[in-house]
Length: 368
Image (cartoon, rainbow, N blue to C red):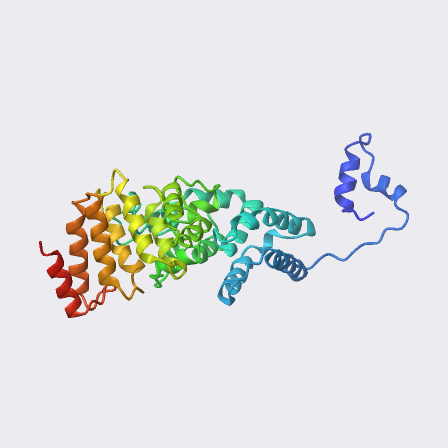
């Protein structure tokens, strides 16, 4: 009988008359006790790593060397929670459920770390869950609470008030670069990397680690991958776009499309359908606060969508013609302005790269 003698003795003693020993009762049953050596932390870590690796292989998840190292750094701040095979099984059972539904949607390293925290330190988990604005750097819709806090004074004061110990603070600094910047001279400026890695520190992914996917607010990578591969079938593409993307998730969905632009077979068809989609938004021209309107955002992104096109001039003319036939007269000046302005900004990341002859031809065709 493989048992924890202290646990079983205590349980038996609860059922015995007062004053009788549970351990003595167990001794009458077990004739030959064999004490197994206590597992070292190193052995526990090794067993857990092996089991996690089996899950990764099972679900065809490959981690980069950087992500493996990041996991190890984070894990060794948390392994004090994991003391027995029972603890290992708790983690593996949760991950066996979470990995299949989270793979391709959120960062797996962050998922594993967050699940360990949730299982063994509920209070710390709730601190992370309820301090979204403090922990991440909002770019597209700045947090109202910290919008004018350009020098992070208020954020630093609020961070110092968190009821956390030094180990927990170190975990937050590793998980959230914006939080780390409050205490170090480093500044993680490449926000696109957080998004592409689907990190919990990205404003678009944070909520996905704590709740089931709600397509009205969020959109999954799987959905976007399906959409971008429909660009050569306009009807299916149109249906997929209109059923998946809305005003709430538009900005995020557009960035995911750009991240997967190499999979798009027909960038012109995709651009046309996106223009049709945005035209249905009631707030297509609204610019709340520092945020661009959906239409202005799309115009900027169309340059990225068409970046690899060898017929960019003809593509833009087609987009103009499409909007003219749809009687969207108000969009024509904006489209023309985009081409004229960005084609002449040779140092701009949005440089359309028209030749002088092409630009002259374009201006001549649409001067009226």
